[in-house]
Image (cartoon, rainbow, N blue to C red; front, side, top):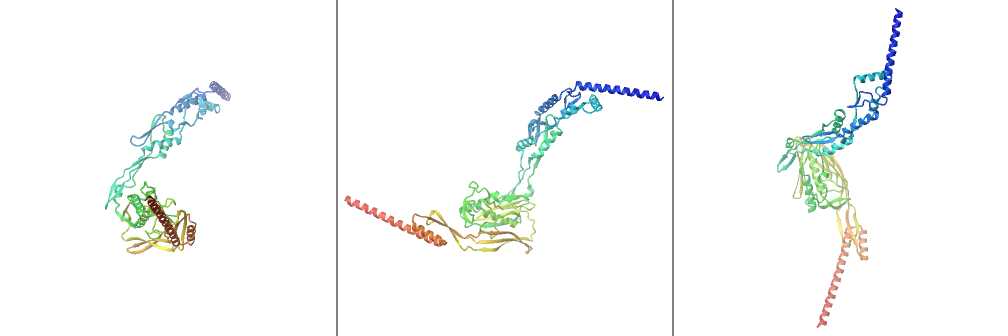
Length: 513
């Protein structure tokens, strides 16, 4: 029995060796016959690359990708809005060309068992390798941003218009905005993961742009939160025109909760086209003419209405020199050259409306909203002067481009350091006193610009001596005397010329007789 068992094992071993040798021979024959080609049953995407060389398979796959470039893609927005492009517009490219080498290696790598198994598997089921694609994100971004711009429709805000004692409300309308960044992500995700390689539709990401307030919200705006008036009765026509123009540009502003108001952005540019005239304004301690002179009275009046409404002031600057239409530290200057602006935020839970008007050379701003402060609550503001700096000298500026007799005098400005206090009372009893701001105003002496141009050395010496005294009144007296003397000399010369002419005429008459 032992002999018989051993014989059987020997026979099995021989048979296995024969089978293994046969399989090895078959694999070797296949390897030799298809050494440079891909095994049968191998696909790249939907391309049968059986029997192809690596180069042939690569060319076939590249051609496939090139043909994909012509496929149409419809990017849908809202309603009938769409962008029609091709895959080529998105910079489509073959992302995994190394897959050809992987396909070629199938059944050619590993030990004899691994290669045999791979070949046997191909006889029963095809091996399909994916062709992966890439897209140019910048190209997708730029195309969507450019082509979707006409689709964007900003919302129309509901508006308020004060008509006498009541408000007229115009209801707003929602808009739609294409979210470009989100749409790019959506398009790329679809093309990489869901695209069937044919014509397709992709929905863009569209956001609804809702109005900031509804008609019902605006209907609540009816309470006076704060009001303030200043006078410009001493102003000339140009400055008065600037105050009225600036007021009209602010009038009718609706500010929604959380929004910030910029005085500079609202009333600029300072140009004739925007309704402004040349008028006096402060510059480097002097009063000079500029387009829009007087606009700071507009911002100051609104500032005080804002304070009384207890809205949040986010930017405020005092003037370089004191102004006459409000107490120290109650002003709010704006200046293009120095970047000064007056800004505040609507820190209430409701819209506010700014009404501005001018009448009898007075400007008034009234802020309307929804009053949430109790009736027992009241607020007022007090100006405290910390320091007063009186001018002790005068300044004289010689101007050789003007003749003697030209004198332009600017009044002195007292310097101040001041604070503004907010006083809150409940039922008439003070409950808090808070510092709102502090201000420093330049002291500027009385200043005169004096003409010194003359051809008379004596007059030149006299005016220079007067300037050296530092007294504007002395300069005025000397300049006046020089002008008077020059006028007297001119009159005498004119009289002499007239007398000579009359004598000459009489001589001619006598000669004729």
